[in-house]
Structure formats: C-alpha cells, structure tokens
Length: 179
Image (cartoon, rainbow, N blue to C red):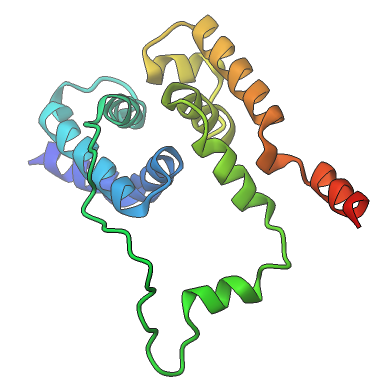
C-alpha cells in the first residue's frame, strides 16, 4: 500500500511537469495527455522496481514512447473549408487571429521551428534547454551516450539557426525592400 501512496504522491506533484515535457515533444495537448497517461501506466507496473529518482525513469518512458509511438495516417480530424460558427458574444478563432496578426510572437515561431526537428533532436532540445537537464542526465533519460546528446543538440541548433520561422530581421528587411 505504501508503494501505491508513493506513486499517487509522485503523480500529484510531477504530472504538470511531465505534461509540459510531453507537450513540448508532441505539440498537441491531447497527444501530450495521452503520452503522459501511457508513461504513467507503464511506470505503475514497474514502480516497485524503480531505483533512484522515479522522475528520470518516467521521463525516459516519455521519450521512448514518443519516439516509438505509432504513426497514424488518420487522427480522427477531417479538413473542411468552412469554419464552425462561434457562440454569440465570442469572436471566432479567425477573428482573434486577424486581430493579433500584426504582433509577432517569438514563442510561436520557436514552437514552429521545433516542430520541424526530427523526434530525437526535438527530445534533446526539450530535455536540455526546456527541462535544463545536463548532458549526462539527458543521456540517461534517452539511454544513449553523452556524445550522442552533444551531436544531436548541435545538429538541432544548426537546423534552428537556419529555420526561416526564426529570421525576423530578414523578413522585415525584405518586406521593407519590396516597397
């Protein structure tokens, strides 16, 4: 019974952080919630055997599950050319986007750039720079060598430097030249 209480305490105290990691990996709240639930279910069965910090073990499950998760061709959504009507008194999503169109949000651009990275590189960036894990801790979570973490981080940062979503100055300069 003590193991169950420990697990419940862990879930209550760390589920928000785990959800943040999962969201950074998947870029989809629903998938992130599914990923955390799957990881916690797997951790529950191994809870009595976990030695050391259980969060490291659960992070490893998150990353491994994310990396090997099924690849669905269809996710239940269907494209349509008509947006649904918004409830009275609430602006539509399109109207809200148009109202904020003049504002550039660097975080959104970074999210888009992260979405372009391969899964392994995205996992390294999330663990190293969002979760602030050391190279050694990241290697433990990903079950790879420190050298792999370094090379994946280097490649990811190189791709991010070249990502057009992150080049505001060039877009502004080009727009000014076109006039």
